[in-house]
Image (cartoon, rainbow, N blue to C red; front, side, top):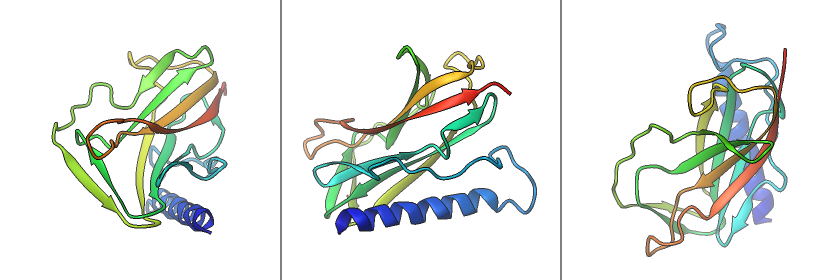
Length: 177
């Protein structure tokens, strides 16, 4: 029952995220695309204990050069406190079909080094929206092909140990236009 409720919450959040992304006053913005549809991972959440994670890539197939949006959801199946060593809450890494890192969301970003606690109630979800412009870590456009997107929650155990242990992945394909 909890899994079903969390899955329904995730779908609801995805619908809200899509509605917000599409409500741009009729003007097409950089994130607007007619091919973006929510495709939650199956199963909806990967749980390790009371915390689960899900990654949505809004479709498997994307045109080369098209901005790709992601939603990372971190859910609690029971009341829990998540511990963070910095202000970074998640990481997104994209690898090519050979497994080499192509892009890292946090590259060249600075995060405050502060210990912080975030309490979640049962069935509460944290949602993070990001996008990728299909440039690699060196600022060069990537080629058509298959890519693996991995989202990781950066939370730790109570002793600020065992950090970055929970992740979800999805495969996307960039198609030449």
